[in-house]
Image (cartoon, rainbow, N blue to C red; front, side, top):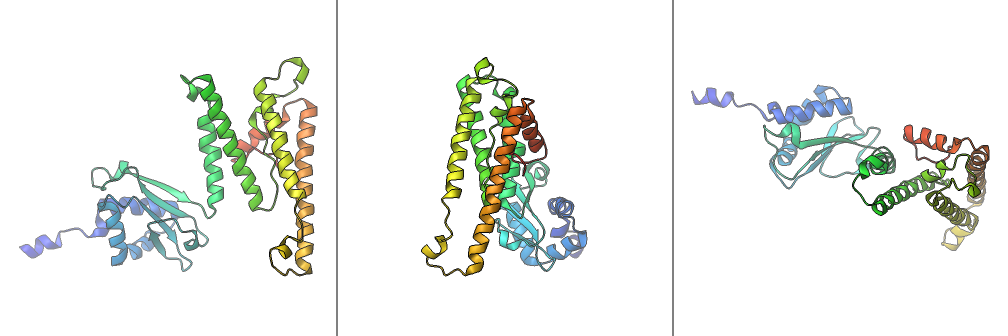
Length: 284
């Protein structure tokens, strides 16, 4: 009789919480259930997942596909573990244990990109900027607070776009959203408010500093740092410098053409970039 009762105890893999996690992971990672079955059959993997569910100190697990094509997990984000596939994190919304009565509402699933910078940029552009820049979300706020939040959001977006450009070896000249309101208004017509003027002045100052830094770059920098670069390094430096300066010239020219046309194309370009998940800068 006792043997029959022991046989009726479900295995760890049959736990409804485990099956819920398995279904979410298979959908997100686009893997077959057989791969999950092989993963959860190992005792160390069962222990890792069980500790996550039963202990309130463990709040996150990150699942990924190894270079050998196997499913694996870790308690922290480690980009070196990822090969050609993105990771999927499982996060507890609040510290605590996950039980059969709360697992559907207490777990949050999300993707970890191969490039954290791209993920940060996407999060800023698709979540932070639309939510914090929406005036309808500022109801009840003092005008000063609303403007300050909008200014900080704009600054965050611009910094991320600049860092993205630096990562690719290009100088990105961010365009503040406020400048898109210039349209066909002339500065002496009284139709350009102080916010736009301030944003434009700040933009020009920021661009001047960025361009100055590019012009100050010297091919002898590696020698001064103690390296011994060959002729190819010199050629690569000047080739990269030429492409970067042409990129800067293109961006500045596009802004000038949009301003002179007076048809608001600058704002439309920024809108198209934001709608496509871009950085809101002039495309090259």
